[in-house]
Structures are given as C-alpha cells and as structure tokens.
Length: 269
Image (tube, rainbow, N blue to C red; front, side, top):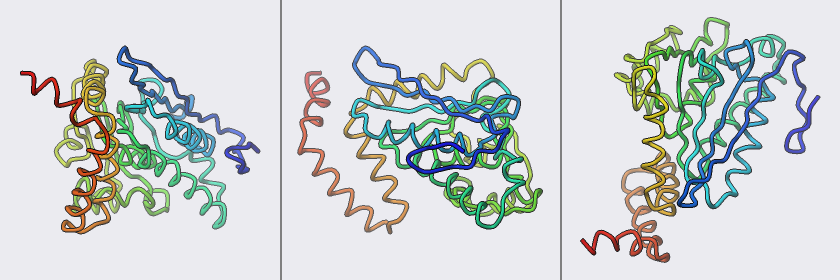
C-alpha cells in the first residue's frame, strides 16, 4: 500500500510504473516541464502508481506561475504508453474497477486542467490508456514508429473515460471503428484521421517538439493560459455562448500590460 495525496492506493506487487518530472528554465525565465512515464519491460503500461505520480506532478505544476509548456514522453524507444497494466486490471472487482478507472480519469483530467499547453511526444506503441492520455494533451507530435489503437474490447472491456474525447479529434465514424473493432493504426493513418497533429520521420522528433515548445514560449504567457482555458470552455458551450465568453476574455486581457508590451516591437516596425 502506498500513500499519494492523502489517499491510500493498493499497489499491485508487480507495479513498477512511475512518472517523473524535470523542470528546465530557459534564458527568458520561462520554465518547461519534461515528464517521463515509464514501466520497465512493460511498454510503459500505466498502473495505479503512475496515475498517482501524474496527479501529484500536475498538482505541483498547476501552482507554477513561470511554467509555459509541458512535454510528456514515454521512457525508451518502444512505446509512449502501451496501455493499462494488465496484471492490475486482471485482479479488479466491480468496486476496485470503479476506483482504478476513476484514478486513470483523474490523471487524464489533470493533464486537461493544466493551465499551459501539454505536448504528447509519441514514439512506438500507444494503446488503450496511452491513447486516452495522448488525447488529453493539447498536441500530439509523433514519429513514424507510432502504432496506436484501443484494444479494450479484445479483453472484455469497453473503452471509457477519455475515449469520449476521440469523436472531437477523429470523428464519430473513426471512433466507432477504433473502439468496436480494436484495430491498430500506423502513424500515417493517425495523421490522416486527425489523431496525430504533427508527424515526422524517426530522428526528427525532438527537433520538432522543441520547435513547438519554442513557439509557445515566444507567445504571451497570460494569453496562452487564457486561450487554453477558453478552448476547454468552448467544448461545453454553444457557438454563440463561446463567442460571448470570448469577448469577456479579450476585455480581461487588457487588465494587464501584456497586449501593449507584446505589440510594442511590432508598432516600432
């Protein structure tokens, strides 16, 4: 048994999953968080320990005002996340199953609630819970080694929680195909259906992720945070409601000096 965030989690004896975070400070003072998820010899399968680690990491990151962007990577070359940890899944009951999947949802929700953009840096296999974690990120940058899919129905389970985000990313038709057939897809197919935002050849992944990080760091920090908050709100609003809320956000931006400060170099030109 382990203690995470004042709650007790029964740890499977073979659950060696984890998530660690490294903070990098750029010359401009901006901070970038690099999160690595890993599970040795298990293709980075998510167990309850990793879920709790992610919850704690994002709870700390949420309070960091200097944070500008987060990047999530899988340890090694074989996988981003190869799914949920099967030995733990195998031992669940209706009650512990509810607790397990709720923990996984809360870990994914912590990613969605992060006040700055989160980038999934994807290599190798991305299955089940890995797809849900990636779908919770703002960007999915992948190389050509990626294979992804939702295999839950193959092991007698429906795909749930953040699988509900898939229709917004890939449409209802592809969502039905993925979830009902448990088909796997390669990187080219992932880009074509809209799951992968940016696809590069192997060897170019880090350079491409850094480009996206630099783009975000160069933007107005308050504006980026407001924009992510607004985008999340749009998911639950009608277009007319979203437009009205956007007017409030733009007006609020002028309560700070960021617009004038960011515009000043352009006006000088």
